Every structure is written in C-alpha cells, then in structure tokens.
Length: 241
Image 1: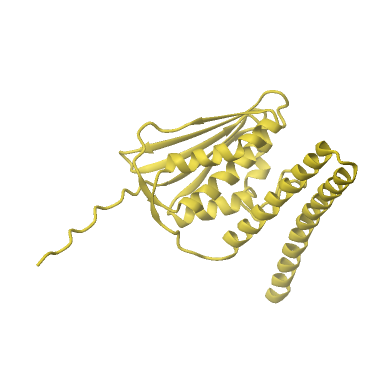
Image 2 (image 1 turned 90 degrees about the horizontal axis):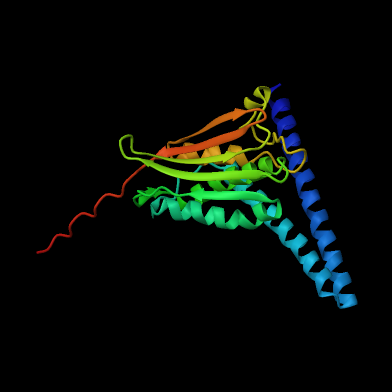
C-alpha cells in the first residue's frame, strides 16, 4: 500500500513537471519561430520580439530547475557575512522589468539600520525572489493599480530579521491557506509550478526561520520572511611567538 502511494506521488510529480516543461518549450519554440521569420524578412522588430519570448522562457526553465534542486535535497545553508539589504535590493532590481511589463508599482523600503549578518545570500535571494514573483503575479490581477511593497527590518531586541512583501492583489481564500506551502499546488491557473512558496519556506527553515502569511480576500496579502539576525563573531587573535 505504501509502495503504491509512493509510486502514485512520483507519477503525479513527473506529470506536473512534464506539463510545465512542455509549456516552457512551446514558448521557446514560438519565440524561435519569430526570430527565424524576422531574420528571413530582415525585420529587427520581429527578431527582438521573438528573443524576448525566448529569454522569458529560458528564465522560467532556469527558475524551475533551481527550485527543483533546492526542494529535492536536504542541505545546510552556505553561510557567509553579507548585506541583507543588498541581497533584497538585487531581487527588486531583477523583478523591476517584470513589474513594469505588468504595470505594477514595485516599491522597496530598506531598513536604515541593518548590520552585516551571517546567512546564505544565494538561498535568501531565492526565497525572496519566489515571494516577490508571487506578489507581482497577484497584484497584476488588480489591473492598472497593482502595487507590491518590499521592506526589510532588523529587530535588535529580538535579534531577528524580517523581510515583508505586501501586495494589493485578490488575497488568498481561507480554504487555500492550508495548501499554500504544499508542493505543486498553485493558484496561478496554470502559470505557476507550485514550488516557489514551498522552496522559500524550506530555505527559511534551514536558517532556523519561518514564513508568516496574512491575507484578506479582496485586499491583498502580506508574506513575512523571518530569520535569526546572526551577527558575525570577531576573528580570534592570531598567536605570536
């Protein structure tokens, strides 16, 4: 019975991933066709349009592979001393074009007092990127007035770091909250893989942190990524003799 359930779960996973990969490949094919047509007709506008489609789908497959790798294996965070504000700012900068394309106002409010901290910069970048991507997709349903606010905060009393992402999208119905961090469950009507939020939660858990969600239907959602604010220890003095 257990073996049958495992095989069924593996089969469902493969089917879900195959569906998303097929859609991405179709997008790449469509973009490649436009590029070929533009080159034949010496039309740079059509070539540029095709390349944008190819590039968009290349980014999708790259994100899917990275999420699969992150979610599929247990690992220790690759800790180093880094500037959290810089890591989050890189995410906002990366997502600005997508926000502009969807007519979303993307705003970034970095904490004024943010010391260098010890964390996994690549992991936290991925966790924040997934949450911001979801927020932009949600806000895009609020046509013409979509908004996403990203904030960082360092709580020196509790030694905690919080990254909050607010959107003014449709909100999450209560009946969907339980499945929010379940893999391959997506509310994006076929646009999402359902891996983004589970991957973000996994990365935060690896840091000893957590992901908090508050949402109101019709008003939007707030995701808070909370992790320990670990300050780097001074190096031990080198003995001289």
